[in-house]
Length: 403
Picture 1 (tube, rainbow, N blue to C red):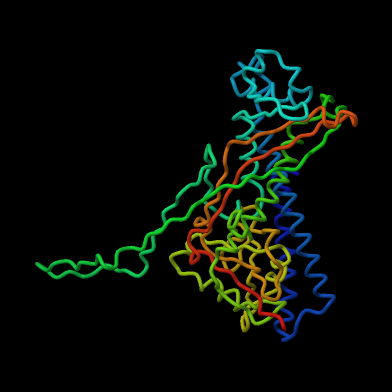
Picture 2: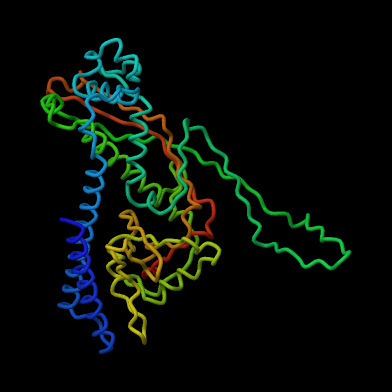
């Protein structure tokens, strides 16, 4: 697929979205809900549009990667710096174990002390950097604009919080003293951003697969480990209690809107949620909800005008889809619309502090699963999170169900 194809695909996607919008407009004009057949057709059109969007994104990613490779083959020799050497040793360690390394390789490897079960820990900066970088792209809260801190240790971090919303300046007459406002100094407090240990659980790999030189074991393993840790940390960054685990952004958010239904939200209720957030926090604000909620929002139109709440954007112009003009993030850990369920967020997510500790360790256990001709791998790392301002991010919640 070329860029010309992307343009054509973008036009095809726009047509699907336009046709889906026509279904909504027809139902709106006829003052009725979508029929069962129209609902199915509407969902199918948006599924096709989402598929085209994913295809175009994949092509752009591939072309960018290919451009980055141009000219690399022309170099006969590339001096091996420390990171390149460490990566080469890392792959050898993954495939053949600690005993395969020479003294010189061990010196640059970052291999730690031996661990129970005849294994060893790999703790170089290179692996930690790659691991943390991959975590940054893992969905949900990390994509919301949260403030991400990378620290080299997991000690408690004290974050000062300032609240001066109750004060204003003053107009001062000539030769008049300014007001002594010391009795109403800004309210200051602190929150403690702690970190918690997470692990991937054991990932087992056959020796045959590890020793197959054609198999990119380092990429496969890192992706598998990151996905596991990414899922559990995103769950806690979303709805964590804050007790013995990170505080989730949903947990720390303020109440913005209680909707009237236990199963559906209206156009006006979503606007109420948006405007429950002070304008000071709406600059650069985003929405957050799950994919089922997004589908429901795509069907909402303004009473009287038929204007849709959702806008599909433009792939070719790199304009993102929006809800009432603001971008959104899909988070699978957000609740569905339901009784007493906090199903949508809106606000400035930079007030959510998300912390990654770069002391990442990868453990390899060769003897434990030797009878199965397998090697076990386990990664452990520390992370934390806290919303420092509940007014900056507000949630919508479903009506309470019947007792």
